[in-house]
Length: 119
Image 1 (tube, rainbow, N blue to C red):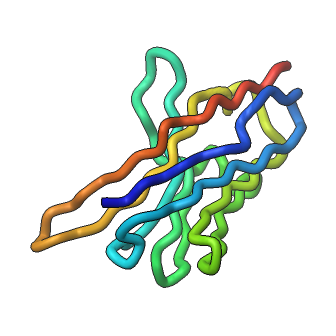
Image 2: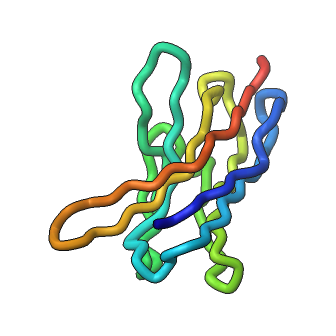
């Protein structure tokens, strides 16, 4: 089992910045990758950014050049630095970690943190 605790959401004006943090605990050794998803009201939950155990990253096209995912292995924490925020970035942001066991993917989720960008 993996537990994820997020922090760092809030209200910011368009053009501003926020940094989200996600601290992992439990069976950390089993994690293949961690990432951030977001879900706006009435919409599906979409991947924003992810980072693998090897350090490879990928981003949704809508956030490339504005968001940066990083990690601190000593603290078992993943960060999402969000710059040049836009009103359309408003959503609940969820931290995700996944592991695989005998070919089966196991997803773990944080509780979610609200990000609101005002115009």
